[in-house]
Amino acid sequence: MLAEIITIGDELLLGQVINTNSSWIGNRISALGIKVQRITTVGDNREEILKILSESQQRSQFVFISGGLGPTSDDITKPVLCEYFNTTLVFNESVYENALSVLSKRGAVMNELNRNQALVPASAKIVENDIGTAPGLWMVKDNVNFIALPGVPFEMESIINNRIVPAIKEKFKLQFNYHKTVLTTGIGESKLAIQISDWENKLPDSIKLAYLPSPGMVKLRLSGYGHTIIKNIVEKEIIKLEAILGNAIFGYDNDTLETIVGRNLAANHQTLSTAESCTGGNIARMITSVPGSSEYFLGSIIAYSNDIKSEFLEVSKEFIQQYGAVSQQVAESMSKGIMKKFNSDYSIGVTGIAGPSGGTADKPVGTTWIAVSSGHQTISEKFLFGDNRERNIIRSSFAALNMLRKMLISN
Image (cartoon, rainbow, N blue to C red; front, side, top):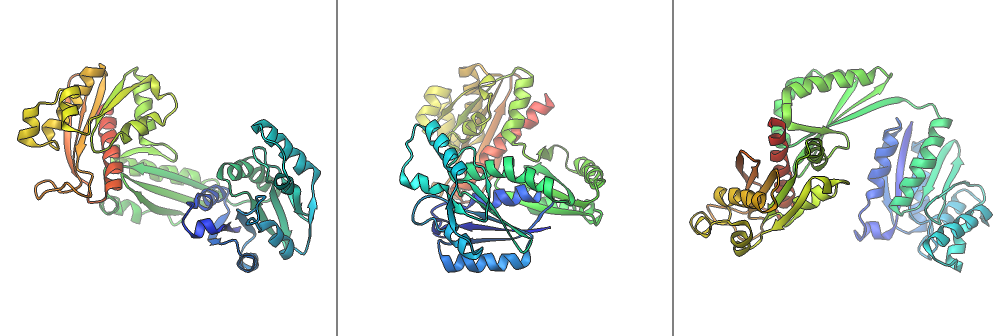
């Protein structure tokens, strides 16, 4: 089965809002065995919406529409759907009662705009929205399913997970598919491709491999379609891949590096502290984004200035003068200093030149020293991450957590 996704809103075209809905819907629908073949974004324009609805109907069995179902004057999706399906807006009592309930839970009062949420196309099947006032709409034309959803991400996700996916599974016979994503870090995309080229060339025709690079990591997604046996075929290929890449693989599917590290620390009742300079607290942010991280994360010092490094982390001023703030000696001293101050089992020290200024011929922008300490050892490594500040912060954070992960494995 084929699907298309249409996201609606001038704010998406202007770049004022990041279009996360299309990628989320694509990922969720693809997991059902429905192939997403096109994603289109249009503004709040009647003619453009009508045009893309007509075009999508010729190509797909499912058309997912996100945005424009709200109560304000720029939300035109419902009137345009009425025009396309040759129907009219009617008042729906159940939608109205749901809106009353949602607003009551928020401590809000129903107004005329909220009441308009209960005006829906007469020929649409209402898809309940448990956490918002705008319902989803399921409409069919010439055996093509048009599913309109609110643009608010958490409302859209709730409706798809709780209402749309179960309904699709019940009504349609779907092709079995299996996706497995292998998460790697510490190896660039091109080097990784060379390292696994023989394995990739021998993959069965039934499996498709995709490289998904991002700062700090490369995802390898293996996809198989057809019979349920495809899952076993994919898993056998991943075992072969694990033998090639070893601990460059840190997880699978929805794992994160910070979750893997935290899980290891918690399992062994061990603690962590961080001393950050160029990353500005991003490592601590990643670690504390994991629920339950207070069990193993003690805290961090963002030692941006040299005085803070010396005063709070006991980094030798002579080290800073002789080797520079971005050096192996300073990174190791930061790691040891924060471990001593917080009495943690493990610690991380990071110092570098995030950019875009501050680089020299000897230490260009992107130069980063990272040190990781345990009770009996300190390891350190120098990285050259490039000239983009945001990317340097992300890559430094990934590298630091990956060094810690490897130390945890070895211990």
